[in-house]
Amino acid sequence: MSSADDWSDPDRLRRYRERVLAERRALRAAFADAQGAQRRVLADLLAFNSGTEYGRRHGFARIRTLDEYRRAVPVQTYADLEPWIERAAAGEPGVLTADRPAVFFTSSGSTGAPKKIPVTPRFVRTTFLPFYLAAWAPLIEDFPGVLGAPDAVLNLKHDPVAAPPTTASGRPHLGASQVDFGAAFGEPLSAEPGTGAPWATLPVPVEAGDHAEKTYLRLRLAVESDLRCVIGINPAMVAALPYQLNLWWPRIVKEVRDGTLGGLPHRDPNPGRAAELVRLAHRHGTVLPRHVWPRMRALFCWTSGPASLYLPRLCEEFGRGVAALPAPVAASEGPVGVALDRHPSAGSLVVNAAVYEFADADQDLGPDTATLRPEELEAGRDYHVVFSHVGGLYRYAGGDVVRVVDRQGGVPRVEYAGRAGRSDHAGERLRDAQVVRALRAALGAAGLGVRGVSCRVSPQPFSRYEFALSPVRPWSPGEAERLTALLDEGLGRESPGYRTARARGRLAAPTLLLLDPDAFQRDWQARVEGGVRPTQVKDRLFRQAPQDWARLTGQAPERPGTATP
Image (cartoon, rainbow, N blue to C red; front, side, top):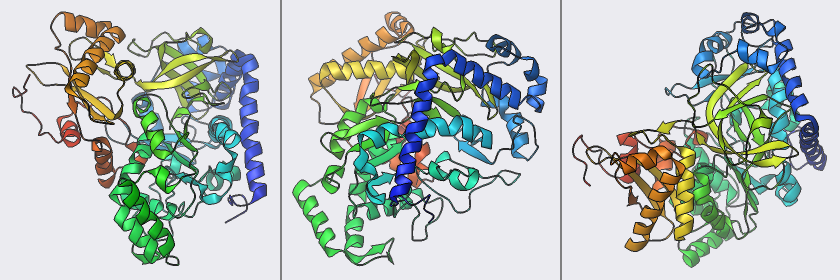
């Protein structure tokens, strides 16, 4: 391990801290002239990529303003850019970007086929690293002890692979959490917290696709360390950890006692720690992270969207006073917002990294949809995000919706609100964000908590929304009935279409299906054991597919016409 990767090296920690805080200062400095920063980002991406085939076809060399850019380039999705991206992935130069992609990020596609997101050296330097590094500033500034030892952070998303899949041209095609940016792009300080832990690179052989076993091995090692922070980005990964501890507890204790890892000799037996773990189980029954790691301080993951419904309870399981710090509002395709302080959910637009446009979330996005600039956004409203950056994504609509929370330094702060897709059975046009807000208000008014929630439109002939919930504690029939009424009212407030559908009898009142406390984590674990990478198993609010609903609820899929009122 080089000193650049050694998290026990004080000089490395000092330089990392300085770099992170410098990137945050640079972003804050850009707020003084945010509109100017946006013009400079646009001018740079146009000039740099004007000689590409895409740039020539769309007249990049002649474009001077955002309005001209809007007229030349349509709003587009991955499907629109996919033919161009496939040519670049096959090795053809100068298609979308002047510099060749060194890596292609993978991301789940709507058709099931993984996307190929081009990642170029210029994109990493000017778009990716500024937000990626600045995102860690609140953690290292407000929780300095978190970086006090290499094994103080359990980074659940870090998943290095020795032989990654490749594109037709031989470029690595892997998740952002699997890329070594130091090796691929010469950025030695890009390695994030937790990547120097003893479990970051597993010391025993394990199949690359056996994600459940890799998670087990990391947890087994981590129970012998004094964890202070868990990084997940995807909150469902963090929510699964308490369930996994209990699922694997006997195996963990035995391996600690024997000094084995995955059944292989690893280190000296540790009967003292094993006995301590046994006492924890006897004392508490259900072992929680706060019992195993009593000095836990922070969780780092997305904190809005469906996660906002269960994070308060989850933080309690990790320890009294444990903070949930919001991960960046971002996707594999590019950044949107990054938290620069301890705001619980929102991040400032990364105005020095990408060009941002927005459209009202209740609109259907199309190639010619009129868009708004950041300075035209209103607090308290939901918007589609459209961004452009030097990495070859131009006026790209990735399908995410954000909510403007407020402004900081004149720049909008946004939180992730959900996906742009809608549930529209009877004209209700419900979005993730509307359902989450209705649920949060109803749960708050009723004084109830959940560990997870999903919904669907129940089959004909009794069309209504059915909500599957895992209560934190058992609910009385009266509590469930009151929550149902509050939820029905809340959906009507959020969506005029839902209100109309209810009034005209096109939708019946919603119903609740109460599941056991571990239902959502058990479903998550099953998908990971089925071969899906943990970072890709995300909270899903709408579960209309019968097989998905059946797996979660334990109910057999209904045949048409067999639903009950």
